[in-house]
Image (cartoon, rainbow, N blue to C red; front, side):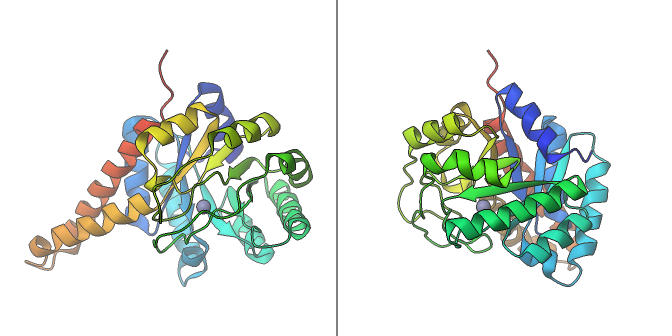
Length: 281
Ligand SMILES: [Zn+2]
């Protein structure tokens, strides 16, 4: 059931867990995420990259995924991932996205604030929400290569940045990167604590695929309410494709291939959802 982004996060924050946000490249990955979320009775966010949305058929794919999400009782929503183009942000809100990840991290701080504030006005007009990033989470969203940490979030900038840009969620850069990690990741826990003390909105952690399981759990306990997962999804999808191929080529059975892909991605999503579930006291 499509549920507002803000509601997903505020409800989860009260419960003390985190909402998993999973990148969906096609109908199969979206089905897998929704199957896993439904089985676990957990909320989930369906992330779509700007490259997928902008490609031919992208708007129709978003409409289809949204229709699919509305058939599943568990609360979900669609978010356009990392986008810095204000026209594309407006287009996203007009085409079924509930939230956008506004990416102005490569801009000077004041230009970044202007972009994020403009996006926030567009979001309010359409009943949607924005997520913003302070500092820079390095790495690529579609291609995994060893990435080194980008600029870390400065806790002293958080209050002003959030008050001027009015996001529903703030993404932190505390040693996390998109894709594969060039070096074993070391998260800056005291920085996270300082950011948490200054931000009056839910926090998100991107690039969770390469982190140790214990680190993800620790981040949730330290106040992270949204965790983005991408590389683990692509790995599960492509490994399942490779493993299934020798069998499905007998009869060129595309449907059987899709079933194997959905099963594998659903298992990977289910494992992540368990890590993000609030600890029972
Ligand atoms: Zn990201």
